[in-house]
Image (cartoon, rainbow, N blue to C red; front, side):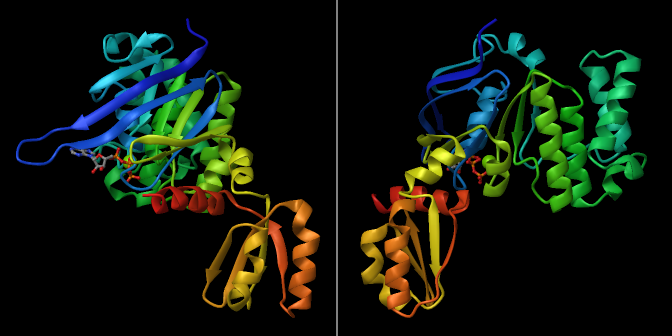
Length: 308
Ligand SMILES: Nc1ncnc2c1ncn2[C@@H]1O[C@H](COP(=O)(O)OP(=O)(O)OP(=O)(O)O)[C@@H](O)[C@H]1O
Ligand SMILES: [Mg+2]
């Protein structure tokens, strides 16, 4: 078997439907995911993330290009790929007439696990997702976040070699999200590989070994969260709540973003002293903090939108 869990080369997808203009959802995406990695696919609404995951998980055929999972061509041999993967689809819902316990167990049995394994994995997975208390209630009576937890519980219970999760923590409370992160970390420690999408940049930062930012069907940047933060020109952020009026004096230090009366400057650590001296000289209160992944994302994607 191949060393890579997933590799796509120049993957393209054009949606064509009668009477509507064609939509290029993927314009040549090349990416790889190594075994045991947790990789996050980031991008604005409509960037092409779900399209990529649907192709990778054999649910949709590409227009051109190639994609392999553990060395098997996904488009030509989907039946070889399916046993290796499990998917949490975007906006998926558990079967309304099943309880979470029945849903997870039935899914494991359908995938070929024996009764004993299915039973113990079901219990472990419900416990991990904090669903023990709701395990025997019909899914239709569960809250939105509890249903989403059921979807994730179903897929993590498979311990499949490659898991695709499309916005897995949407609608979950901060405790439940951390429960998902822990479970995904445990799965990769046990040898699984994970490709997920998320709009929560703190989640990507906490969870992903590497990120791909997709914009209009193309990979804009890839690397670790730290790489991306460095790419914005510095790793520190200086906030001056009354600094907007002085923006021109700070431009040479790095990226400046005015927000109401406030000013934020992204600055390289070696120029921090100089910047603080100028702030003090200008009688501005200034606080220093790390750049978040969200700020780096806004900067990198924003710059690409401006370039058009
Ligand atoms: N079945 C379809 N027919 C036509 N166009 C489609 C279809 N599905 C998606 N698209 C278009 O393809 C593009 C990519 O959509 P996709 O769902 O992959 O985006 P996404 O990155 O997952 O966005 P989001 O963050 O909103 O989930 C969008 O412009 C979307 O409108
Ligand atoms: Mg999507």
